[in-house]
Length: 176
Image 1 (tube, rainbow, N blue to C red):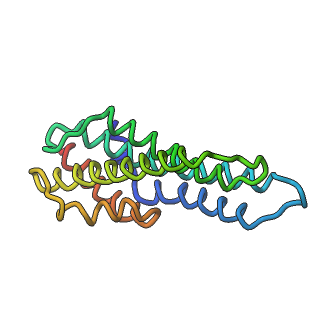
Image 2: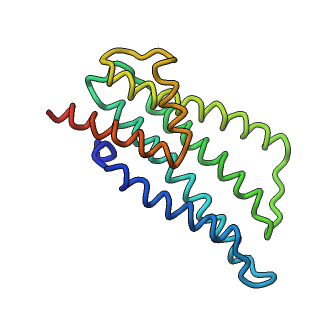
């Protein structure tokens, strides 16, 4: 479970950047007139990037929740549920952009998924960042303590370079 805490920042960053670069490449590439292949790859790497980011954040949250010394505990079921909602919500955005099949999503479902995705994202960012800072402080963190970490978690892929070293320090502390 603590494997995510041991990874170095470049081990998380490089696969993420490969996914992002391939997404950008296929976003700007038109293979053949009428061929949806570049759009399919764009959709594939877009969804893969979303899954990668949210699984990384979820793994951090679950690992931090299992640390006995961490004063802040959250509901694992709610954390997993919110992560799945975020993945589905951002996947919907990629599917709307997929022009080949002309996917039409009703406005009521767009509104509901946007609303749920927003609040799920806020919950995930708050929970994971508060858990990290609570462990570092040795007590429960207040909003202003973990606000910057929540913003950095949202600022992908740059956030990896700030968050992952903090996780390495946490791993060293719990194993010493």
